[in-house]
Length: 215
Image 1: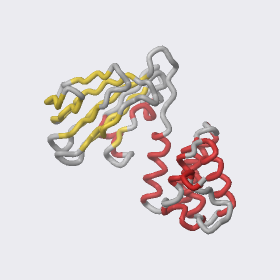
Image 2: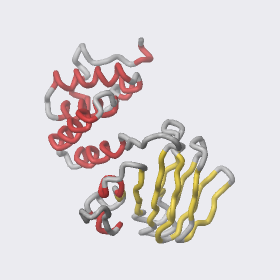
Image 3: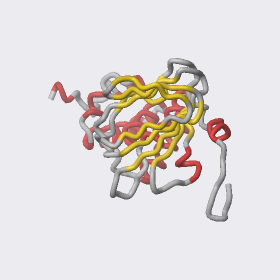
Image 4: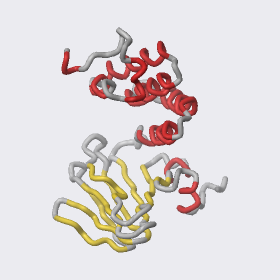
């Protein structure tokens, strides 16, 4: 890194600090104008970029095969994509996916909404928390979510994941409070909570939100 108005790094080195699949370029460099990340396939046949659209964000996205060999899955059919291939998805409604042909295939992805200031997506913060959940570090996951909620207090998914961490830690009242707040902002979380193993310890509590289908 440099304090001279620019920074230099290597994808492989940045990947080592994030579990080796997601390469958090935007966060590593502090990019604020657009989203930029890289993804590295661990095996042939792996979806490096899962099928999705950007209807919710309105983002245009550009994907570059930095190394390896991939297939671009787009509405017109699969497109062979060796290293150096570029896919630009102008329409946020278009479904897209990228599958690796060989281990180590690396995809650079760049996106933002035309004409609007960029704001990074919640999944970046959630990714960190999920890694901690997977290792049983619920206290660490709680801290990540507390910091995320402080930055964006109205983000329902942050409140929900904070509730999950608190439930795992036995912090019943706080977990119920944050779960109810998440469900009040987005009804889907009341439904998700019905089967979420992280919230199992709370389901006998009379304050636990009912499924929207039972309302």
